[in-house]
Image (tube, rainbow, N blue to C red; front, top):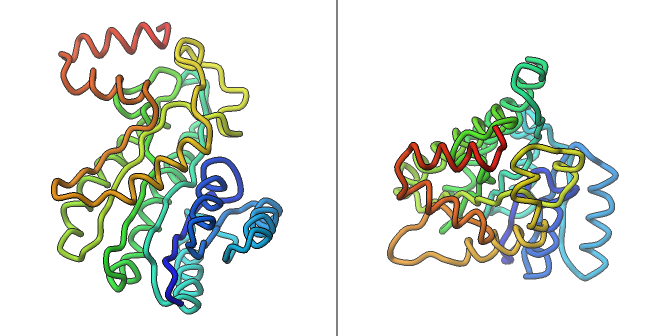
Length: 260
């Protein structure tokens, strides 16, 4: 198969679904993976109904065996892996001590261990594809630890560091690794979530906004490497402030926005 390919986790809904639809419309063969089989069936129908190409499969991103199986199936069919999008994630909001420890662990398993497992498992296929890319979904909540999103923000901060390290390591293999940084996105993940920052900053991005940002980021391979791509004006402002303002000012701003 000559067409480029993209392998997307958490593809049944939200950002993953929007990304799958956009890449399919641009001529990519899409691998769409999730635990939601009904959502995947609907996605496949939407893609093929518009003449696109897609393969779906059930994938628990915390399961190493399933990662190996799904990637091997995808490679057997296509013989290439141009882009891996580590999108699958979960969120629980509220005071740290009010959330069960099991829920905190689940957030770490999906949001961080899932990215580790997938990226590690995908390496041989990425290395075998010239110009391959890894896209990790980060979050503006990782710019500075967010009240009521402590473990979620912690996982995204870890994904940030992982992305930077692999971007350095894997340059020798012609694999580009980048992070996408949206703030709050109007998806099922944030339905019913009420925190100080969602109240003060609002939910201004759509899944389509983030998908468009992923598409644009994967088109850019200039002379000066860029790793982090903020999505939306708010995320760009917050990232700039965090980069140049003194730590006490960043803390004060986050305290204000979170109402802590």
